Amino acid sequence: MLSIALAGKPNAGKSTFYKAATMADVDVGNYPFTTIDANRGVSHVRTDCPCLDLEVRCGDDDCRDGKRYVPVELIDVAGLVPGAHEGRGLGNQFLDELTNADVILNVVDASGGTDAEGEPVEVGTHDPVEDVHFVEEEMDLWLASIVDRNWESIERQSRSPDFDLDEALVDLLAGVGATELDVARTLRDLEYPEDPIAWEDDHREALASEIRRRTKPFVVVANKVDIAPEGNVERLREAADHVVPATADGELALRNAAKAGVVDYDPGDPDFEVVGDVSDQQREGLDRIREAMAEWGGTGVQGAMDTAVYDLLDRITAYPVQNESKWTDGQGNVLPDAVLLRRGSTPKDLAYAVHSDIGDGYIHAVDAREGMRISDETELEEGAVVKIVSDAN
Image (spheres, rainbow, N blue to C red):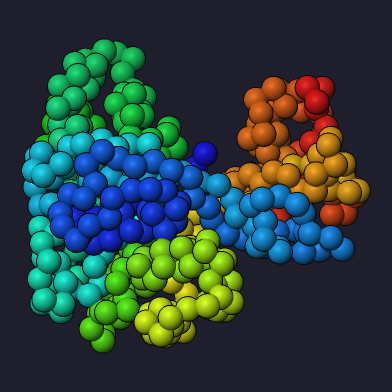
């Protein structure tokens, strides 16, 4: 399952975001290090379900009238403070938890109501732009320290006549999710001495930063926009490539209200409808949430995860079926499974994503939308419905 990690300084709203996105029971508090041990849960990214093209909607629990929610892992770990890569705060524990994440949501307090250490201050007194690159820099330095600690081994290997730098770095960096392709592209983009013994700290830090950028891309979540001073979000957008305004508190309130039957709301909707009895105070609170949603296009919690997966990681959703005419599995369930694939994936990639045995026994595939057999080299598109024919079926 694809993994999304929540990063940021303490008290920026990570745990609230996590609880809103997973509805898991976690501590949420207005003090640093609310989270000590990492929380791991299942959340979802949202896309349009192919059942919208059918006369009936699929009965899958993750589809709500054509809004398809595809499972992903969400990790909430302890907050970072300056010097985390040297072990300050819970830094090493935090950074170690990120090694298996595919993408990182950097949750920033857009209101400027927490200082660099995560301590509450008057709203607007801290510049949230300072927090944008802080997490990236800590991760870069942490990864650079790993490279530095193991560089002597690289130097020893380099004395062998069959030494290959790419292979040595893949072995070194595999633990942080770097692939052969990541290493090859990184070395292609860097300038460095041919002999590893001649490498200096700057070379190793540049290597670490580029590997981190490729293996742990960032989306900035501009949290607490409902109380942020005017102009803060725009300045955050100038400071980072991918910024999603959000109110995790608002999302959590709506999720709880929907669970109680007070509002009609699905995660990612731009608005909601009050369908139950509410007090004057509750209505005022809901009105404030609606105002923020109207300004920013929603609460941003679902939008941040969708941006991370579909935009930054460039994933598509494909739907494997057994019956290409009815789009069902062997039990007659319509579109029972949704699989996240890298853009450019082929039917055989989908087969392996379903199960390694299905991939090993792959024979051919059928485009269920067209009812036609498709080439093994066909690049699948978002919403592809595919029948995999395999001798393992």
